[in-house]
Amino acid sequence: MPKLNENFFDLEKNYLFINIAKKVKAFTAAHPEADIIRMGIGDVTLPIAQCVVDAMKKGADEMAVKETFRGYEDSGAGYDFLREAVSGYYKSFGADVPARDIRINDGAKADCGNIVDIFGEDNVVLVTDPAYPVYVDTNVMAGRKVIYADSNEDNGFAAMPDYGVKCDLIYLCSPNNPTGSAYTAEQLKVWIDYANKNNAVIIYDAAYEAFITEEDIPRSIYTVPGARECAIEMCSLSKTAGFTGMRCGYTVVPSELVVKNSRGEDVRVADLWGRRQGSKFNGVSYPVQCAAAAVFTPEGLRQTGENIAYYKANARLIARTFDEIGIKYTGGVNSPYIWFKCPWGMGSWEFFDLLLEKAWVVGTPGAGFGKNGEGWFRLTAFGDRDRTAEAMERFRKLIKEH
Ligand code: PLP
Image (cartoon, rainbow, N blue to C red):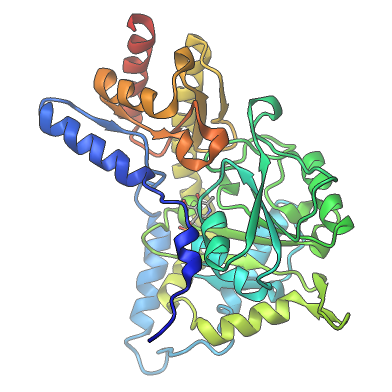
C-alpha cells in the first residue's frame, strides 16, 4: 500500500474562497433582488490586447504548416525570442537580467511551488504574514518549518528582517498580495543584506510589478545591488497582460546565485533548477509564447498598458473614497489591491457580512491571508469602472448610516 505524504494533514484548512462563495450563495437565495458587486477575487476582467491575440493566432497558423510546425522546444526553458524579449523588458526598468537566467513557465503559481523541489527539507522558511497562501502551503507539503515576519499597521504592512531570526529561504512579494504595499529600494536592500549575511535565498514574487507607479519602488529585485547573489525572482503575465487564462510567466535564477552543498562545494542554483525543470516540465505552448513575446513589443506594451491604466484608475477611485470617508488603507497606488482596516473595530468576517448584507458588495476578509490580516479587508480594482464607482457610493452610504 502506498504511504501518503502526511505533511498534507498539516496544511491549514483554507476555506476562504469556499466560505465567501457559500455566504454569497445563501444571501442571493434569500435576496434574489440583490444586485451584488464582486470585488473579492483577484482575477482580471478586461480582454487581452488585440496585437497579443494576433501574435497567438499567427503562432497557431504556423503550427498548421509543415515548414513552420514546432514540436518540443529543445531547451525547455522557453524560446530565445521570448527570453530575449523578457530580458529587454527588464532592461527598460534598469534591471540587468540576461536571457540565459530566464526560464519561461505556465504562470508564477506553479514555480512558486515548484522551486521548493531544489531545496532540502530541513530548511527554515520565512514568510511575511499576511501572504499569498501558496508560499506557506507548498512548504508545509514538503514538511518544512515555516516561520513568519509580521506585516502590520505599525510597519505599513511591509515586514522587515530581524537579525535575531535565522532562516534559509525568504518569500517576499512586492507589490504585495493581499496588502497592496510595496517595498522601496532601501527596504529591499535591507532584506538583500540580511539574506547575503545569513546565506539565505530570497524568493521574490513580482507578479504585480506592472502596477508600480512611484519612481522609488523597484520593478524588480535585480535593480537593487546584491540581489543577483541571493535572489530568485518570479513574474507573470497574468495581471500584466490578462494571461490568467492563457498561462505564461517567467522565473529568473541568476548565474551568480551559488549555495554550498553538504560537502562544502559551491553549487549554482540555476543548474539545479534547470535539472528540475528538465525532468518535470516540458515547456509552454508555442502560440502562447508568441503571444507573450508580443506583450513586450512597443505596441504590446502600449495596448496592455491601457488595461493596467484602467485598473489603476479604479484603484485610485477606491483610494480617494477611503481618503474622503477616513478609512485607513494600504495599496491602491502601486497595486490593484486596496487593503483597509475594517471600520468600527470589526473583525474581517463580521465586516464581510455587513458589507454583503447592507451594501451588496463582496470583498475578501483579510483574516484569510494570515493572523495579521484579522480586522483588515481586501478589495480589488480589477472590476468594471461603473460598478466600482457604484460600490464606492454604497460604501459611503454604509459608513454614513451604520
Ligand atoms: N503571485 C501572486 C502574489 C499572486 O497573487 C498570483 C495570482 O493571483 C500569482 C503569483 C499567480 O499567478 P499566475 O496566474 O501567474 O500563476
